[in-house]
Image (cartoon, rainbow, N blue to C red; front, side, top):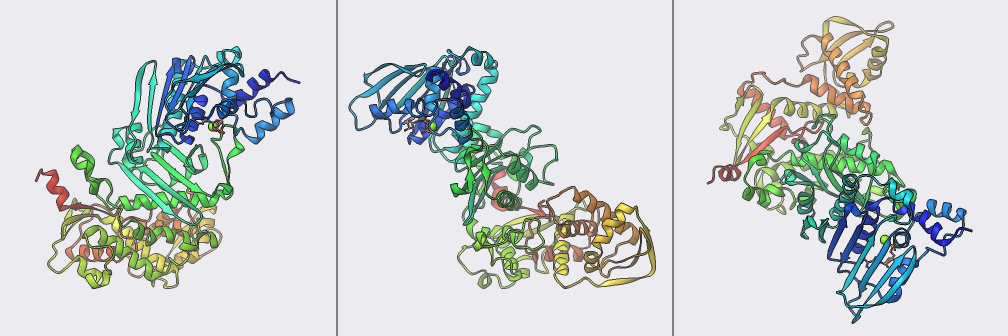
Length: 612
Ligand code: ADP
Ligand code: MG
């Protein structure tokens, strides 16, 4: 049998691997105790002192004694027990572990007690226990970590490195509890002083001012799980993986899998070698997760990973699409303007209705989407995919952002038709750089990107074509032959039925050859052969994106292929048609891959910028 204190030290090594692990446990205990103010003090990167002071519930004398003894002697009797504990997790082991590997002093007092209690512990043994005058709450200090386990102590890294770990743990806890005051004092110098506030304020306090007014709110609720938090606007993405935080039921977790979902949601908005910022909170029924797969509880296992993945990605995509409707004009605004609610939270109020009418529902309900989710766990999404609702939805989110009106009012009564809302014969459109279309509307103007807008229009037209209204084909007078590599021929062969729906009549002809019998009637494809080759090329490029369905990739490819390029002069009539088509779309504000189709510049924001 192992002597208790040795066994405790071994077990402790699993929970307390370095100063930062003790910091995490002590901070979490203070939060659990309902503290409104939590102060962390460290000396020598926690090697000589870690102290956490809170104004939480405090403990009775018995509880304080129990807190350090719990499991420490009863659970660990032999090596088998140790192994068992390692696999079962370490709930209730933190203080016992800390007491096994450092010199601990605790002062604690409950509000209802007149005096507090002081306990000193070393090597798991109580050295001193006596009443003490102290304020409500708890202060635990641990000195000389691993003083009795030299091997471990020598294993610690440089102060700079251990301090980085501490700060990282501190940030994780402080992000999860923005309504709690936190401070961090290192060697007598206060390095963090975080007033209680909103999550947004906490993010800016902790991660830096560069995120001020560059955060996009994420919020989606379902029966199965909720998500909320913020992601950085694409321009804040960094070259190094840094400000990325997932919390599940308010505990920080590491998840390469969910991180991939995030990275993918930004696809096309940021360079592929850069990393988006996010602070996201996922809440779901604890029975749907297994927190104990890793002893320090930073890795968890979801019962159904795929649903969580799809949901996180859709929620973030949705948020990014929403934000892209507002201008990124606030880039250089002065601080007072940045504080304005309209600049900071353009969407909060009608968030709910817009959420329900949003593409996220469609994403989940479209049968051919890679992420289609079946069944009853998403009850409230199920009836959202009717065409009519989609149209209405686009209309709602559109008008909401153009003209302020009372959300409750039925739209139809106010704006009898979509066209009337936008353009009259008198609206003068102008083209800028042969790339953008300037659209003046009531209290703002829009800058529409002609290619992006056109991609959206074609995409929705083709989506409809896939659902049974095939695009008419113009037969070629002199059908061209296409010679492909065997690999490409296989790909094209697979796509023929969908291409046919889109108006491309292509037939196999021998081994790896095809004949182009016709192309979409209303599209000038120019060189027919070249257009099919380009579709194939672009499609292959998309194929590296495993998460998209075949249909989706083809839709995007062809929309892109047929769209008007920048540097193309447009007549007034063409511009008019494009704008009308765009705003008749179900989701006019982004391209199929999530880029903005237009930016809106509001009159009052312009006036503020001009100091008016
Ligand atoms: P766990 O948090 O898993 O219960 P710990 O070893 O971290 O295990 O803490 C043991 C117990 O000590 C807690 O359950 C709690 O009752 C008590 N405790 C620890 N820290 C505090 C604190 N700062 N304020 C009040 N009670 C505390
Ligand atoms: Mg604890």
